[in-house]
Image 1 (spheres, chains in turn yellow, green):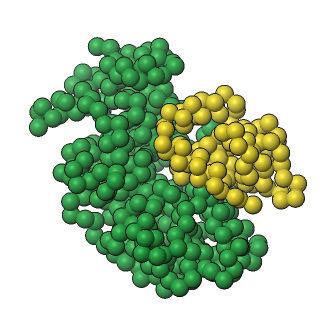
Image 2 (spheres, chains in turn orange, yellow):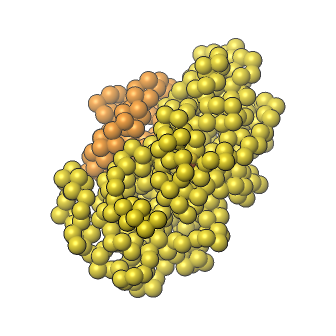
Length: 90
Length: 380
Ligand code: SF4
């Protein structure tokens, strides 16, 4: 729950404003991006995701750093990814 | 003396940077002076144990593990209340997986599930919303926990439920706020903390400004830090530099992610939906004024405490449990009488053993005989 997971924005959802399809660890997930300020997010942006919401925009280098940190966490990260995989936010 | 934590060095790609930081940290320390630095966030605790950061520090520097693991601070009474709600007619209780094992006086969510309660694990409060939509004849409750990192998500979900006019969704709100907890810790008489390693994700939301009173009123340096081992070493270096120079300021080591002013949209969402409670109980720390959020009157129909006649159970922490002392930093996890014997991650007595970010679980999982621990055991 406390882990921020990086994801790369693929497309913005036209039908549901505020939602985006994001590549998270190789899987496509729906994420709410309404908390990102100002000009919002664009495809290609990286975001840090907490419980289904993008909380911050980050650069790609930071995303990779965070991903390797998470992978080192082992079980806690696998549990979070598993929960995310079972999530069907819409 | 060079760093001894070979495991960390071998694993870590920036070993030279880490060694350089460790060497520099050693030069900043006045021999014989004791430096107590509290890392507030459970994520930091996890990194510190996992990578054996303590082995990189001179003996004068002691890390104290703070109250920033939301699972660890939820009082038993709230768990019991949540289970009571879950057992009401037609209820589906939804919760983050982290919370399922947390013991209340009548067992955990997992125990209640075994007794027949419908308790489902979700990744996001938006999952609970979906469950509510597809089960119109059930009452779906989201067990909301967390610091300011997860509070905006709950608030946004309530706003969404309101916009959709959902009738069968409510939130059992247990969101806590970090600043009052820090105030409570700073007011405790047995405090031996000279500086703080500030939480990364919480600060993404609240920014760095709210910590200013710690630097200005309490004269303690405060450095917001990232989660990599190098981030933590760098934050420790920044704290020791301030202490050497007699400064106490708020600094941001994690500028890669944390904006100084936080996330205004997230703060607005919280403020729209929630207000501070007059007081809230923290496991181990007791009752702290203004330290948690509740749903505003305006959104009362999404507030499980108004929708249900929640018993407001109050339960004392189990007598064997020393989580309070661990959370205040007066004892180290392994000094608790039941650590690793009666209390393990499989059969936790205290909450610090439940979450992988709790100090006791982090220590139990990555437990290793650090120099510090060997010396303390020898002198005990
Ligand atoms: S070992 Fe268990 S009971 Fe003791 S402080 Fe840690 S979590 Fe609490």
